[in-house]
Image (cartoon, rainbow, N blue to C red; front, side, top):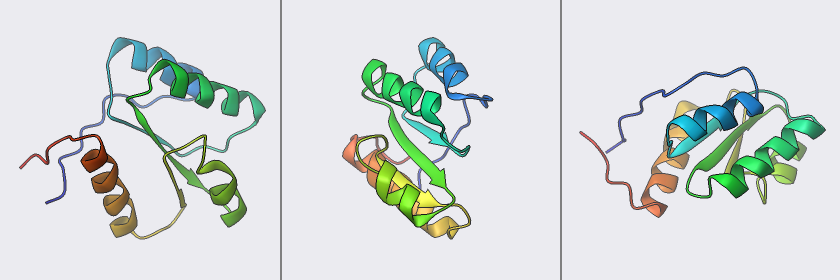
Length: 103
């Protein structure tokens, strides 16, 4: 069964995401904005500071998906991908983290 998802925070940039993660632990960080060089550094900082938080990136192009999926993100999806693909990625990451599905 698909886990229940709760939005903990919506932030403008990855520096704000770092601050939000410092205040409240999250299992998954979903990044939907384009990543410039400072954002990539912030994403690495998030990975280093919060290793238990999995990172999913929504990207515009296939080359970004291939480039960013490892090591910057645990998963990358092309924007506009079917919701079922995002649900499958969420389920896989939560299963890998041993987070039980909620009903």
